[in-house]
Figure (cartoon, rainbow, N blue to C red):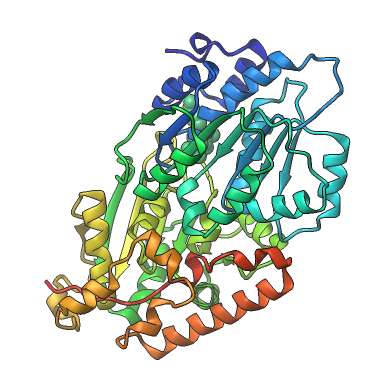
Length: 463
Ligand code: AMP
């Protein structure tokens, strides 16, 4: 099947061709006809499947029919909500590319940058707004945005928005968009929370599930290395040097962990920058740009900041620390193996993380291959200092997005005596930074929950 068979006009087809797309991806084949048919959509699509074009192309097609080339009256017809600034920028970049030959204007609205330039863009009139919920509501309260004529509402990476505690903001936004609209909800995972949200937002949605939900990308080779915690940094540097890797995305659980790792790598002659919620928007954008342009070899990221990172042919993703929310693993490794390219995701697993690994394997229904690296790893978990399995602690540590959301003010380290004091210090600093950031932000943001960056904990896994 070709894009032209999907009923897209020649201006869009030309733009897609320039992007080098020849065939629609499975999600695009499914979603484009449904959206063109004006139906609501609930789509469980893994990251890297081409979902952005899956919803933007048909929206552009419908909007371009309504907008005449010479018409210069613009009003907001489509609102796309994303959890992070990076994802908002990424979606906007895609839309700008696909709508290159259309008379449609796009604005990106997110916090961390001045509001006035955004107001100026909105004043001139735009057709499509891509926004993170907090800043969007700032505009709503200042009456600098009019959402009353929105025909299309898209929630992208809705699972992450829920994880980040945006549910209240989403509900507030709903009060400002027309009831009669077409709504599309995209989510990497298809949890019960997502199903509940979809019931309140969507009307008779068509379900699209191109890949099994909660299953990690098949293009990605997944490997785990069992390693002592204090050997992780030297193993990482060894891997990068010996493999001569030039573009490596490394995940840590905390902002301070990311900063410290960056310092270490730079000292080891591996150019790196960190990207996390504690960095200014300018610093985040520069880090991402330098990484994309291969000016630096390593980008060290926390989960939140990594959303929306879309780099063609990104070959290596390293979990320096495993996430304590198994779904985050799926999101992380989805940064590689995108759009048909192959990638490798490596996880450096220490004793405290065995339980996380178990949870991840359960979620992705795959046993991750364990590989030895002489001088660094241990072949058997028994060789690591594995604490005895404690059923109660396992029970207490069971993590779900919902629980993380409800206990965001009480990170796991506080409940888990096994945590190392250094981890506690990092977490404390992260929380202090978070509180400081909240103080500096608009009052309405007080409802927002502490995000993934601030969740952490430790667990144990016996083998
Ligand atoms: P997404 O899942 O939307 O984040 O897209 C992942 C990557 O796939 C992006 O780099 C897109 O530019 C690319 N992409 C989207 N659709 C296609 C297609 N039909 N053919 C090739 N690449 C695509």
